Structures are given as C-alpha cells and as structure tokens.
Image 1 (cartoon, rainbow, N blue to C red):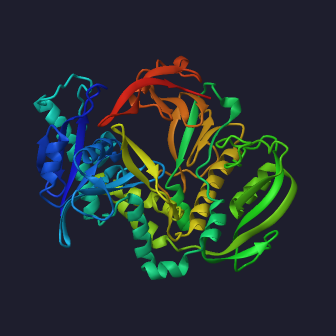
Image 2 (cartoon, rainbow, N blue to C red):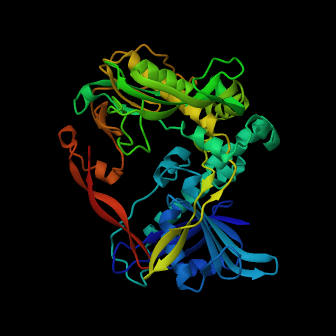
Length: 550
C-alpha cells in the first residue's frame, strides 16, 4: 500500500476559508507524488489508489477534509460502502484517523486511511527536523499574504510545503524500518513490551485483564507527574541550578518493585504480607501539612478543592483518598493526619525484572545511536507506562455539519478490557516520590519541581546522585545566572546570557515578544497566540491575546 505524508496550507481570511496548496510525499522513496491547490485535486488523486496518508496534527487538517466529504456526497458510516467515511476521534477531540471509502468492489475497496503523524512523533515539524539530523529544516513563509482563488504558489512556497512533508516522511520512514508501524507510538511501545515479555498469552498470565469495577477502584490511584513551586520563591529572582532525571519512568519500571497478577481485596488497613508487598489503600481522613514540608496531595473530582492545587490541608473536611503504598508513605511523612479511617484496598504480588529486557534493549539503542534512531528509541523507552492505564471506557466523537460548520456529538460508550492500571499507578508514584523527596531534602533551597526535574536556589550542587546518562540519576541541566518562577510550568531562566522561557500555552512567536524579566509577571499580557475558530468549510487560526494567569 502506498504510504505518504500530506500537508495543507490554508488561508487566514475569515471570508475565504479554504486550502490554497497541498502536497503529498512518498514515505518509502521521498518522491513528491502530488502538488495542488485544492482538496478536490487531492481527493481525485487519492481515489484512484489504496493509500495511507499522514498529516501532522490531523485535528487541524481534518477540519477541512471532513466538511469537504459531507459537501461532496459522502456520508458518515462504518458499513464501508462506496462514498462513505468514518473517523477515529476521542471524546477529548483527539484525531487518530479518517477512513474514506471511494468505491466498494465486492470484497475489495478503493480507499485511503488518513492518520495523525503527531501521534507517532509528538513534536513540532521544526523540532523533528532538528532532532532527526538530516539537514532538512523547516522554512518560513508569509502566512497572511493574500492568496485569492486561482493563486499559483511561488517556488519558495512549494518548497516550504514539500520540506514540511519531507521532514515527517523521513521520520516516519525510519520508524517503520524499525518495525514501529502501529497507529501511535504508545501502541508501538506496548507491542514492544508484550513481545519482550513473551507474547500476549504470557503477558496476560503476568498482567491479567481485571473486571471493570476492580480496574475503576485501582484507577483512582493513578496520578500524573508532580509540579510544585515553592511559595517563598514565587516571582523572585536568583541564580539557580537545575537537574533532570535520566529516563525517570523507565528507571522505575526497571529498578523498582512492580505489581503483577490478580490483586487480593482486603478490608480495613493493609497488613504487611510478604506475598503481597504492594498495595493501594482506600481511606478517609482530615490532614494538615507539616511545617516546612512539600504538599503531595491533590483532590481531583472533589469540587470543594482546586483540581490542580497541591493542598496544605483538607479544609476541615473528611476526604477520601486512594493511595498506592508509595504515595501513602509520602503522605504520612508530610502531613499531620486526623480522623484516619482505613476502608479497604487491593494488595499485589510484586517483583523486579519484568521490564528489564525491554528497557535494556531500547536503552542500548538510544546510547549507541544518533539522529532518528536515537529519537525513536527515546520514544519507545518513555511511552509504555501510560498505555498500562489506558481507560477501558471509549467514547467517540461523531462529526456532522450544522449550518456548514463542522460539529461533533458523542457516541454511546464502548468498553474494552483494561490493560493493567496498577503498573502505571506505581511507576508514577515512584517518580513523584523521587522528585518530592529530593526537593524536601534541600527544602530551604528548593525552588521548583516538575515531574522529573528540580531547581534549587544558588549555584552549589545539592546532595544528589548526579550523572549525565545513568538511568535514574540526576543530570545537571545547567547553572543559571538568573531565574524567575511564576507558577507551574511558567518560568524564565538565563544561561550564558541567553534567556529561556517556559510558559504553558505560550507559543514561540509570543515568547519572542517578551521584553525580559520585568515584562514577565503574573497578569502580563501579550498578543499573537493563535486560536482555532471554525468557519464554513474549515478553520482559521486567529491571533489573539495571551495572558499569564495565576
């Protein structure tokens, strides 16, 4: 089957919403297969062959493709009849695929499957080009230049389009050559884990599919990375040292106890058991943070609390918690706990070594490779943990047109068997513990932590295990001569005279307008953030304000 990358260039005029050029590049040969100036041309070309096409950020390009299908006699259906299409779009609006059936011929079809390469390569095209090391770098054009109907792109504009397609094509080609051919890099990673363990049957012997109710109870304990800013350093300026953990989650997969097998339900408080050394405890309590301690608890799903805030206390309420044994120990170390009631929980068999072969293989590839191979190895190392917590409840969004505008409704939920959520719960618990305890051990200097990174005031090295590559050790990212931290994922640092800005949701073009430290404050507002707005036939990225909020 022909595999290609595709890309659209679209107008920015709300009164004229359409694509003004497209390109298709062969992933196997890197040949430019087709250039054109309308979706009509692209669909006509694709309708004569069976193919797969990868668009980088299909959520955007799909907003042009799907209306075109509705407006040109195609109907949404999963029956795979002539001139039908169906989509794979999650309840959160994530685009995974669009399958278009051009013609049904008995048991054969003329069709195209359009995928999102962003799910295979979760970076910008510019970043992919730089990481690949192929000397193909993204170019620039004037996006807002008037391009009326009939406009013929300049040679530079065609080159720009082809370059974007070529960068992604070369990255995907190298992935496919390594056998990474599934729809997402997460699925590739999970398949790799299963293969290294000994196949699906062996995998299910170790990690059995639990019933949905048990999985639901275990899933309450699954939480993401830890992000915290020490209040005493908020908005202040000082030199700092910053460290990142080398492959934090792979390190936990390889070197910590991992749960396996059917869990054992228990009532009340967990009692130490050599056969079931890991557990998830369901409890009720009030709590208050100990003096000079880092908060570790968020209460999501409880409207009495800010969902993303790490809490100093429970506000006088008795609240429910589901904590892994790792998180529970951390919780009791950092909080005064009152009215504690142990309700029930699940305990697990546990061992080390389940993922050694997988982690060691991909670490070896990473350490002995450069460019694309190193990039893919890093993705394979970092992606399997989250797949263990894949939600068995699947809700798809179904597209339709309303007054010419593309809209979606939610389909009835479907359920599949869980993978094994407890693995993800414990991997992330171990990760949070490492980051939090490292910051706590140097509390007076601890400025900021974010999942696998930590920053400390001053330029002295903290008492931590430092190594540039060793799995699970802290890599010295840099000693910064100046820094300012405003909130979670929002800070500015200076290294060798160069200012670096991290600000969640702030695009690069806006970062370039920030006029130094005095211009970087809570409440500061800038212009240039592009936000998608739907129109008849597609979507336009309209520039608007960006404000640093509390």
